[in-house]
Length: 200
Figure (spheres, rainbow, N blue to C red):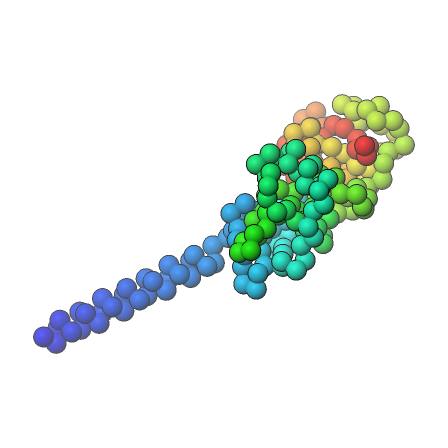
């Protein structure tokens, strides 16, 4: 009888321990954009998809999108039609995060789906304000080594992921990694980064 009692207590303790471990694991697992809900205090926790820094997005910080901005988002992602959309601007790199908002949830749906009407272009890696090169758009695309006086804060565009990055970050990411001397993108680690950035 005593052995059965000890066995019962042991099983109950083990079940409680397993339950606590599973609960802790579920609460501490990293979240991914698009699968996030409202966290404690009505906030959404996620890494910025542009600069990868941690964000805590409170419902009170969200700015509802205007009808023209919603139309631009829907043009890029038709599945957003009819949703209540809001914006949160990353304080580090100024990426514009679009979120679908309901009474119970905040869900990340994309970043930079439309061009904000404010601010200067910034490097998507370090956040530095970019300077536009003095030559016309496309003048040295595909042959950046011939560009005269390419400065560290000039903007470049990755041919693979379309990230806009500064020359300094691109040179740092490259570090003699390519045989032909082409630039490597600091965002996606692919090459070539072969166009200069000129705002539309």
